[in-house]
Structures are given as C-alpha cells and as structure tokens.
Image (cartoon, rainbow, N blue to C red; front, side, top):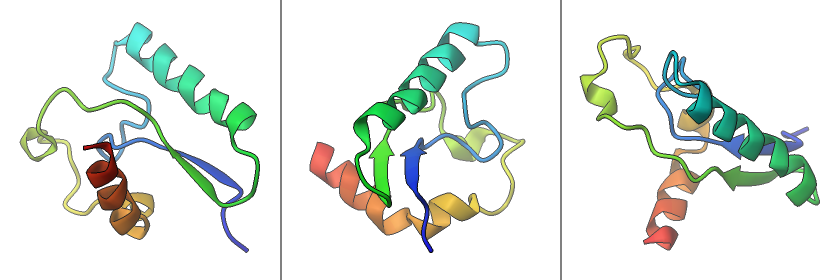
Length: 86
C-alpha cells in the first residue's frame, strides 16, 4: 500500500507550512496543499508545491541533522522535478 496523494513542499523538516509568524505565507501553503484534493485524480500522485524556503536550509540552526523521512524517500523524484522546472 502506498500513499494516496502527496502535496510535497521543500521546506526544512519541522516547518511544513512555513516560517513561524508568517500567517499569509502559511495560508498560501495550506490552500495550495488543499487544492491537491481537487487536482490529484489517482492514488500515488505527488504534487510539488511552488514554494521555496527564503533562506539556505543549511544555515537554519534548528534544522535536524537528517532530512525528513518523506524527503529522503522522494529525493530522486524531487531532483527530477527541479530539473524539469528548469
């Protein structure tokens, strides 16, 4: 059994909807994530949300030493999506 549908975002582990206190940015992320329910038509689809973290993740001192399990699992797919975008 796999995942039904995924709204993927390349934000640092522990910050899935954005920076603390950024209500407008968090709202945009949540609305985009919810739109996956309308767009995804079949199980296993992965939709990459069009957001980038505003700082280099390596500079974030709260970043854990390992990437999130989901990002680790989909790392090759993420790299391919980045290359396709451009």
